[in-house]
Image (cartoon, rainbow, N blue to C red):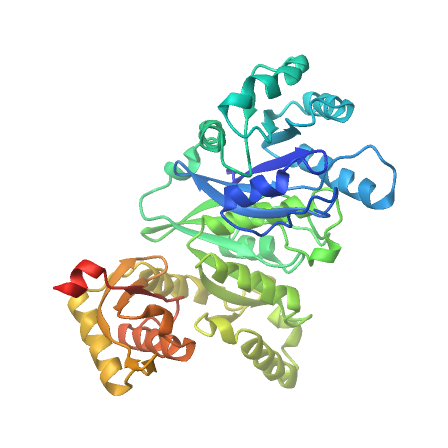
Amino acid sequence: MTSETANLVALIGRPNVGKSTLFNRMTKSRDAIVDPTPGVTRDRHYAQVTRNDKSFIVVDTGGIDDEDDIITGHIRHHALQAIDEADIILFLMDGREGLTPSDIEIVGLLRRAAKQVFYVVNKVDGPEREIDFLSPFWELGVDTLWPLSADHGFGFQSLMDGLADHLPDHSIEQALPEGTVRLAFLGRPNVGKSSMINAIMGQERMVVSDIAGTTRDSVDTLLTHGKHSYLLIDTAGIRRKGKTKDKLEKFSILKALGALARCHIALVLIDAGEGITEQDTKVLGYTQEQGRACIILVNKWDLLKSNTRRQKQLMEEIEMATTFMSFAPVLKVSALTGKGIKRIFPEIGKIYRQFNERFPTSALNQLLEEAVSRHSPPYHHGRRLKFYYTAQIKTAPPTFAVIANSPKGIHFSYQRYLKNKFREGLGLDRVPVRVVFRERSKKKSRK
């Protein structure tokens, strides 16, 4: 059973038409470099965006240009890949500069691609400029032009609402049995993700190959195990950035990250033969950026069965490399021999319960009071920090808000102390825990 991961929306256009500015507005960030020099965005930048309860991944590309210099040719190559692989394309043109021959050429490429395209005329600073700035672009013969000022926000809400209307619902996921646990299998290419799913399923349901990159997209398999249902999401391998030059490889990364965004638990595979690499830690970092629970599967453990010294060394290396997520269980497994496979589902059950657990506010406040009395908060600008109360604000992962008199004055070390106290006191030893600090409202503080 195959389902969509997060849709890919690519920003396409000549250099300096405002793609990076629009990307920053869409993602509410400053991740992409904004510079008036043409060709500043050398590579793709991406981020996940949610609009009207629909999620997509937006990809900022370098500008397409006619010149033949090496860098421009590289940018053109990547932008053409974006056209090829994106689900929806936002094609930006410069309203101040007017329609150019390059714009016309790109429109020809887009028509041949037969994709859903939004033709956006940027740098239209307000409705009074709309008629004059849009007039030259009707020559393209498109049904709709979207006036926009990526810099000032004019037309942005309309564009985003129109985009959301064209994003499909994930009907397959909506049809999953209630309480289905979604599991994403992640890792570098060729670490054995598909083989691991086959071992779990007990039958050949995935394409298994020694050729790196066999799994280009995310493939979902629904598994019923006892009274519980699981969605197993097999993803393409995430390569090191410098090695992602293959035609589909960079978009495979985006697809994998999209799969991560919709799972509950990420199972990250590490090759026991190769050891834990920098890229493995980056993949693990992706799981924590999105607040996912995680199990580290050290696959191909059979390769070390007669080398106890290397076994110990590898486990120490993994422990050192994952100090930022020491809560994640580490299982020694082998998709080839079946070693350790039976331990996976009991661990998933424990993690899923913790990941979705809710706690009574009274118990949380008692825990906070005990933590503060055991280790008093320091002073900030001459007055002691005070913590008034706490409450759980969400699950998956468990997230708690602590109301304080001066949240900005809480040192990182004390934040970590409180977080550890929450983890220990609530028995959350297998999942990420988030604690946010908020200031008490002025009205309440006067009472």
